[in-house]
Length: 131
Image 1 (cartoon, helix red, strand yellow):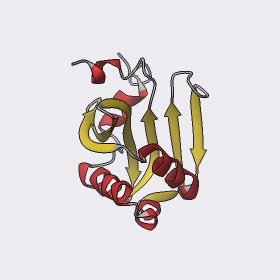
Image 2 (cartoon, one colour; image 1 turned 90 degrees about the vertical axis):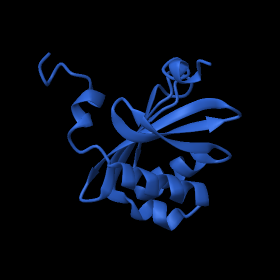
Image 3 (cartoon, one colour; image 1 turned 135 degrees about the horizontal axis):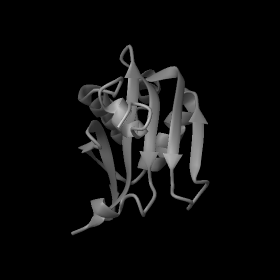
């Protein structure tokens, strides 16, 4: 499989994936409601892609630290956050009422998050909810 043929998550696994410490900082900021810290972890040109699997727009794109921070805050409200390896990259899982409702991974540059990927498609989260 050539580099071009590999899926995006596999291409980013070794290149630019946010490290575990930065993802943990983001999770703590979100859990504690520290909006200014959340925004400080985001690059000024940060982009967030949300794959909801057609429940909402199939792929929603958000731009800028204020918009991304607000979306992450809304997504994590009344949700537990736990560290996880998402397709080989550090990230976290969002759980509400015992059901995984999303996964979050990111890419960084110079210790700031440049891209954030959220998967909330029930179909794509099916294996996270097997018990």
